[in-house]
Amino acid sequence: MVPNLANLLIRSAKAYPGLPALALGCVTISDYAMLANRVARLASGLRDRLALRPNDRVALVMRNCPAYIEVLFSCWHAGLAAVPINVKLHSDELAYIFQDAGARCCFVTADTAEGAARAATGTGDMHVVDVGTSGYAALAEFPPMAVTAPADETVAWLFYTSGTTGRPKGVMLTHRNLLAMTLNYFSDVDVIAPGDAIVHAAPMSHGSGMYILPHVAAAACNVAPDSGGFEPAELFSLFAVHRGVSLFAAPTMVKRLVAHGESAGAAAGHLKTIVYGGGPMYVADLKRAMRVLGEHLAQIYGQGESPMTITAMSKAIHADASHPRYEQRLASVGLPFTGVEVRVADENDRPLPAGEVGEILVRGDTVMAGYWRNRQASAATLRNGWLHTGDVGSLDEEGFLTLKDRSKDVIISGGSNIYPREVEEVLLRHPAVIEVSVVGAADAEWGESVVAFVVSRPGAPATAAEIDAHCLAHIARFKRPKRYVFVAELPKNQTGKVLKTELRKLLA
Image (cartoon, rainbow, N blue to C red; front, top):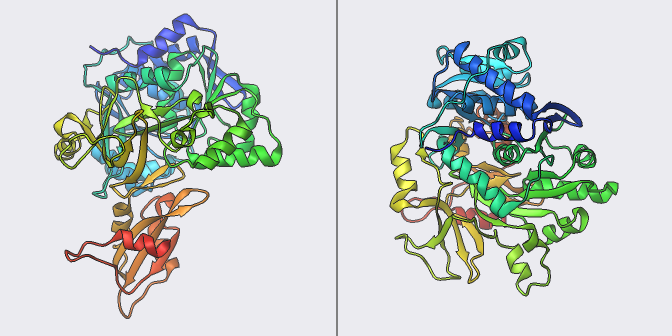
């Protein structure tokens, strides 16, 4: 039987009860003894006051804040599955996830409460709890309960990731998956000492939230910025206050930190590690970042189906400028994590020789149990015992993996995944749009930006502003196209498939 993830907190609370556990900006909110006790009481409140039962799903639509960690661990302590959700999603998108997950409860912050409540309409007896209210405080008034023992495949984190079908799929991450991810952080990413800190400037609903686990396991302090997000000047001030500071960041965030450090002459303070991932990071940008911030960069490549854990490139490899293949290594996404098998394969899943390009397959304890209530998609993605990432790359003789393309056409903008099909389906709802195809364009700030090629209905054309307003009414702001290109027709092959490669050439 796999231990409950809540035991990571209990262990740290016993060994280091007085160390800071949670902070808001520069102010410590809770030590480890206080946090463990509060989590056990909240778990009782979830079970007794809200009548939740083991394996029920609990949604989190919350900005980064100390309560995020409390809610996550109280869910696990009580045997519940957490469903952290991107706060940028439209209420229609939230409603779909609530219904698909069968969420019984949703925790919100003040800025997300209205949208979440609107999305919860029609979901039955779903509780919506604002963590800044007396209703949330009342959940901690119950006596502490014992940790619920999970079964081997109990879902701990139901992670919703968009797919090429246009509807998001729930990735089932078990206690075993997330424990393996936690141990892999220590083996291949970084060492965390008790009393170190992680600053959560990226969303806790995604990668930064995953890194709550290793930092709790090591009795480090989880810091939420006062702003609740990413502000370069604020981060530099936090680097000066907290010790042994780590940060998970998308490449665009790293570049903005570097620009601020250069322009303001800001010192990196107690910055220890920036783990970057979620999009391409160019060699020139890496070298500049190390000049400005120091040799504190580590890289990870993963996806929701193998969270944060496919390959990694350590700080030592980043700093090894004397290596004869230094630049080729920096251009890669590193080596497979310890205990994780990575294969580059042909269309029949047969391994390809070093240097040849094929689909990236992954096998190991970090790989998801499957997609929530979607056996067909699970079987396709996990066929022959391997996770089929949909990404294309090559392995070299030393085992370094280099990404070449994304066969699923995913657009990564500012570290967020945007799937063209999802955007296209919304655009096609506009009465003036006959055909549309969405592609990614290179963007100096965001990595990629969304571009829509639109064929308008004859005699009733729409303006870019009208279509943009339509998008804003139906999908998250960050997913909408940044540019609309009106064309007479879309390039297609003999079978009628749109040739996105031709559209990308037009942009180039």
